[in-house]
Image 1: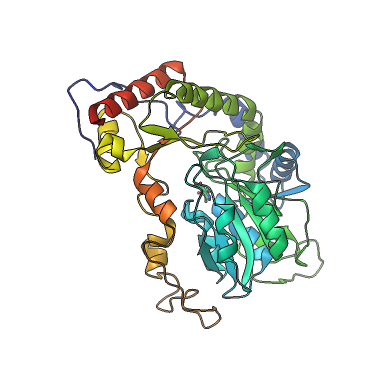
Image 2: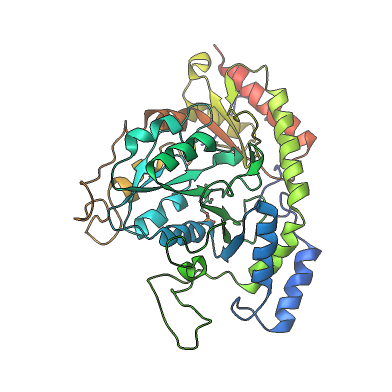
Length: 414
Ligand SMILES: Cc1ncc(COP(=O)(O)O)c(C=O)c1O
């Protein structure tokens, strides 16, 4: 929805977007490597070397021992959950504010997502709320670093260690974000990344899992997305249930070229993000999300909370007015409700009419998700503005975004 304050919107031209080259750095380097793949005639990863090279170079940057490349961020997370190999009905802690791709893998493995409320200032999982969600069925915690801002990993790892939980990091939106001297994704047991079009580098769709401890559960990570098939064995075999989530050589060619662009892309996102932080510093009705001390954001999005009392309006009206000023933005993330209130989960639209895993006889109880489950997250969805960010945003765009936000805030401010 869009509403106009007047006939003179601040932003009259489209801002750079991740949807095309205005906000993405893709060009001759990618083309050259793609040409190599096409000319070789080897498009599949099992016969080529581009995916292997992409994995090695990626993990070299991230600070783990090994990496496996897959077809999406959701596939990366699913690979991680397959590696963990939960029993049906086992429980996995997760944030209610993340992409549905974080939860889908849990459901496909017949495990149950247990939603831990968030810290109101960072909107990442609140470590203080974890303990009350842990039972004798809890196997793991899946931590999302939302909007490019690291979750508070030290206390999360501490609770996980005390309860023997496996830690999967969802760094889909936080490539190379730093937390206390390390990169997110390398702090837990497995780190998962998305390489979809909007991410810090992209292969169109794609994903990566990084690890420093292959075979912890007696299964090799690579088999978890390759039909459980140890291809090096002379006789064909399938050791356990697993899908095919291969990345192709074509995607890896693009990915290899994109690796060279991480530095400038992150620098550009950080520069413009910090500029807007400075410009909006005195604007009381909007508060940016906080980053914990000794951590840094990589600005997947620019996100601020609205003080609705000061503004005397609801979030939807503010966002509609921002749209009226020409600013693309959303109310809340993943939307105006947290994940557990979407029909897939709340109405158990999973496997036929079974209602599994929520109603599975293997679960500890019948799982139901109602409003009020995570009040901080629910409120965040109603009071948060998410502006998509990208490396094409320059100072003049930041000026326009700043002016649009101030105009709308001044219009509503009581
Ligand atoms: C936090 C988070 N987790 C998981 C995913 C899933 O990644 P993909 O869309 O590549 O499957 C995304 C993608 O947007 C994401 O932002």
